[in-house]
Length: 550
Image 1 (cartoon, rainbow, N blue to C red):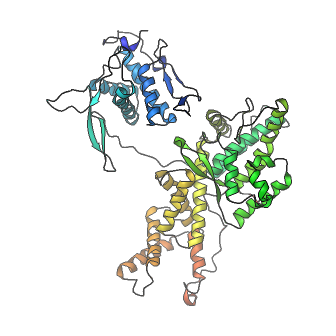
Image 2 (image 1 turned 90 degrees about the vertical axis):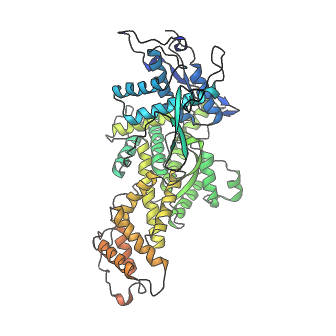
Image 3 (image 1 turned 120 degrees about the vertical axis):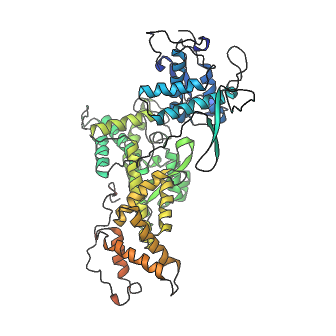
C-alpha cells in the first residue's frame, strides 16, 4: 500500500476493505533510549502499513519527550488514538496534512456509528487537535522539504490567514481560559465512586499468591515455594503500602534501609555497623541482628504509636513520594523476602557466577536475575484475582490499602483529639493523600476517607456527619458563658436528634461514653452511660486484617 502522505484526496472504492488501525505497526522504543543524557522508558514508534516510519508521529512524540509535556506512560493511549486517526485518513485516501474541520466532524460521526461513547470520542478528538497544534514545532519541515504549515488557529471574519482547523476559547472551572477545537463538545463526566476490595477478598487474593490453587509444581519444590513467597510479597507491598504495579519492581532496598535508619530502627546494632551498612539485606545471615530489628519494629508501633514508615518511592510521572509502609508489611518483607527467598536465590546465582551482582530491588526475576517488569507484576496479580474468583486487578489491592490506612489515621486522630471536627477531618484527608502519593486532596481521597468516617461514626450520610462536626467546632471555638444563643440551641437540638439515632456500636458513641465519665464534662454524673458495653477495638467495615504480633 502506498504511503498515506502521497495518497490523493479520493473517496473509498465501493466494496474496498477498510484499513484497520492495526495496519499501522506500533512499538515502543527500548528503555535505553536517552534524551539529553537521561535514560527514559521508550516512546511510541508508529510505522506506515508499508513499514516506513510514520515521521509526523515520531517527530510529535519526540517533541513531547523533549519538552517534557507528557509522561511516557501517558503517551500510549494518545498513540492509539492517533493511529486510529491516521488509519481513518488512509482508508479515505486523505493525506494527514490536508485535513480540516469537516474531517474532524466526519470522524466524530464515524466513531458514533462504531458505538464509541461520547466521552471517549471527544477525548480522541482532543488528542488529534493537540497533534495538529504542535506538529509545526515538532516537525519543522515535511518529508518533501517544505515548511510544515500552521494548521490550528482562530479564524476571524475577513482576516487572513485562514486555518483549516479553527479554535475557540473556553473558560475552565478554575476561571482560566483554554484554547480548544472550535467543534469540541463539553461532556459531563459522571465519575462513580471507586469500588473497594473488602478485606476478606483481599485475603483470598494474597492466599492465592502464596499457595496457588492451580499449582503445577510440588509443594516441596524450593523454587516454587520461593516464587510464591516473592509474588505474595509483591501483593503485600500493594496492599500494605499502596504501591502501583510499576512501583513494585523498582522498590529499592537502599531507600527502605535509609527510611529505617532515619527512624533509628537499627540503634541496637551499634553506630559503626549501622554507618557501614548499605542495605538491610546484609543481615540475612545474622539472626541476632534480625531479632534486634524486629524488636525495634514492635516498639515502633506499640510504644511510639506509629502507623507506618515513610519510604521513598519513584511514583507516577517520575515524581518522588513517601509511601506509608505498615509495620506488619515491613515485618513480612524482611523475614520472608529480603532475608528469605531473595537471599537464597542470590547465593545460588553467585555460586554459579561469582561476578553476579544483584540489582538494588526487592523482587527479582527467576529467569534473568534482574528486576521484574511492570507487565509481569500486573499479570501475576491479575492471574491471582482470577484463580481466587475475585473480580479486580492488582490496583484493587492499592484501593484496599487506601481504605485501611484512612481508617487507622482517623481512629488515631479521634483518640488523640477526642473530637470529630472539621480540623480533624482536614488533617485526616491530608495525611491519607500523602500516604497514597496524591499531590493534593482529590475526589478519590475524599471517598476513602468518607468510608472510614461512616464506619467510625455510624453515620452513613454526609449531612449527618456535618452536623456533628459543626457542634464540635462550636464547642471548641469559645469558652465564654454566653455561647449558647438561640441559633446554637437549635443546632444542639438537631445534634441531639442525630445522637439519638446513632448506633451504640459505633466508635463515636464509644467516645461519648468516655466523655461522660469525665466529671468536668458531665457534672454530678447527670448522664449515665457506664452500662453501655464497649465494642471490639477495631472498625466494623474496614479492619487491619494483616496485623500480627511482632
